[in-house]
Amino acid sequence: MTIEDLRVFAAVCRAGSLSAVARDLHCTQSAVSQHVKRLERELGLSLIERHPRGVVPTMAGRLLQTAVATGLGGIDHALHRIAELARGEGGSVRITTGATSVRHFMSEAVVAFRRRFPQVSLEFQTEVSSRSCLESLTAGRADLAWITLGSPVRGIEQRPVVDLPWVLAVAAGDRLAARARIEPADLQHARLIGLPPNSVARSQLDAWLGKSGIRPVFDTSVADWDTAILLAELGLGHAIVPVLPQWRGPGHPALRLLPFPDLPALTAGWAVRDWDNLGPLARAFADTVAAHCGAEAALPADHPADHPEGP
Image 1 (cartoon, rainbow, N blue to C red):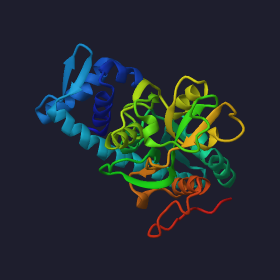
Image 2 (image 1 turned 135 degrees about the vertical axis):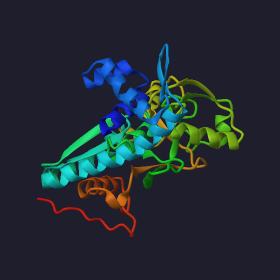
Image 3 (image 1 turned 120 degrees about the horizontal axis):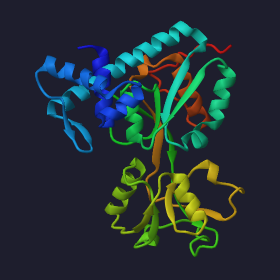
Image 4 (image 1 turned 90 degrees about the vertical axis):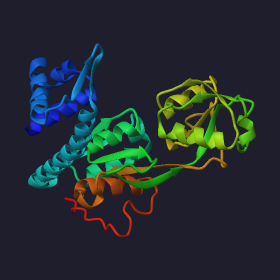
């Protein structure tokens, strides 16, 4: 059993396909299969089941997959930190987040960070959900994950940075556009543009609406907050979304964002494997983003920043 065997096995479980992993690794499907078979011979159990549409891990395979994801993620994180130490000021910071998060939460921070650390590479990995970001973090492919904070996740530390009040996005000519605020009763049986069903934001919104006895109808689901707001601005429906700074102000005369104060705010922030072992460059970037989001501090008092000095 080798580390490469475990890496390939984990990749097969994630992709659900031997051929897909072979393409990613630029090798043959037979070579990928040999890695898995070597593990199966040593363990004496089948680790994957083959189906017409791909492969899925067996019970033993799922146990190994979980252990491998945690173990290799730690090894990859350590190797990245070692490489960072070797490069000194010319290291890199790997950030995973949603497609529009950089524009809404990090644009000014990225500029400020690059001015302070011009030799440091910022590597952004776009994911489709907070869950995907956490998977990338666990697997050691990222140092930081910017997510909508939800339930605790084993092996992950979450730190809130900014609270996002909810608003109802409507077109300027909509019958609700002149309202100073939205009340829960305004949404009873309303037809809304829905956030992605598997997102943390949607699950928290649905839970609150359910507890409040509100039964809106979601006509359609979109991939992200920006699309929901754009459709509302075009008069194609209403959207309950977190308030995003880039959509406020004179640049959107056809849009109204109506406060919905009864709905508990959504919290966005950082997730990491271990703040104590986070590299100084990643810590510096996390703090820079927090400062530009208006947070008082990126780290709590018991985790003093140990940033490297700028050039």
